[in-house]
Image 1 (cartoon, rainbow, N blue to C red):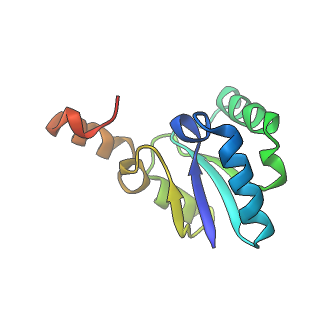
Image 2: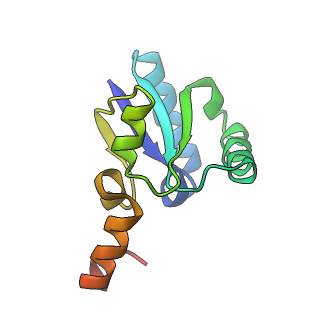
Image 3: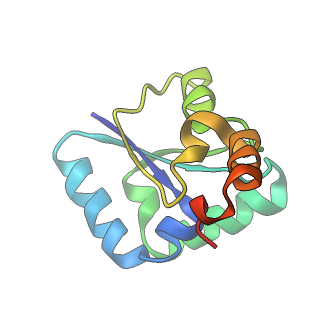
Length: 114
């Protein structure tokens, strides 16, 4: 299976626990990608990769993808990852990206966590 794990608000909130989860998944034969809505640029990539390195994620993670607001599922597919299970604190970003997030927030601000 392929697991897509969000960075901001997910890994950053529970880095040790999710690192242990990634280790277990990896040794079970699963593939893990870290995927973030952040813009793809040198600074963001360094921030994410340095954070992950502090918790040994690089041993278990197949890819780090920065979507620049594109829906995560679509972006993962463009990079040949068909994610089976998503772990994300804002699941609307998986299928709708920032446009979906913004639209939902306009309709119902309480639907989006703060």
